Image: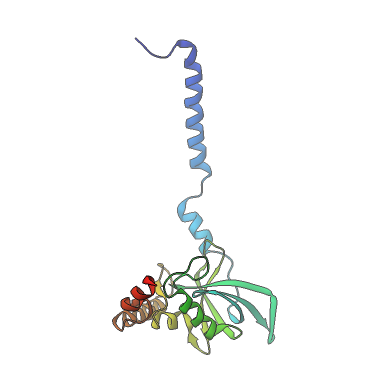
Length: 192
């Protein structure tokens, strides 16, 4: 019988034991998928209400400061990702219609008083607060979808009535070929 010399068996056994212990340790200490995503979902709720849009990062992310007693609190600012949508990128990489989405949000929100309403999912993996952003009574998340400047990006558990409104708006934007759904305009922009 050929095999490993008897002097090597204790080393092989020790290595096998270490591998088993390492695997068991990994299973013991790694967070369960549902636990880690729920931790993001169950982040401390913030008070809803009035904010001031300080900065627009891109078509679906802003920096806002809380308004308390009619005073903007610049030390109390947060990054807010608009919930239920995904706009084309314009910050790290530029995607087609990304600059237009960012310009739309700047025009609607920058320097203005806004209202933010939170949902069950309160924070994403990048530490941004997730909310529905209103300006002058209009849901900006919905306006972006209506203009074809964002896609619907819902998760189970998000506000069902808002999700339905977003889906209807996306369907209409597709039919009317607005923004990202205007494939002729997108193709010519991509070729430039």
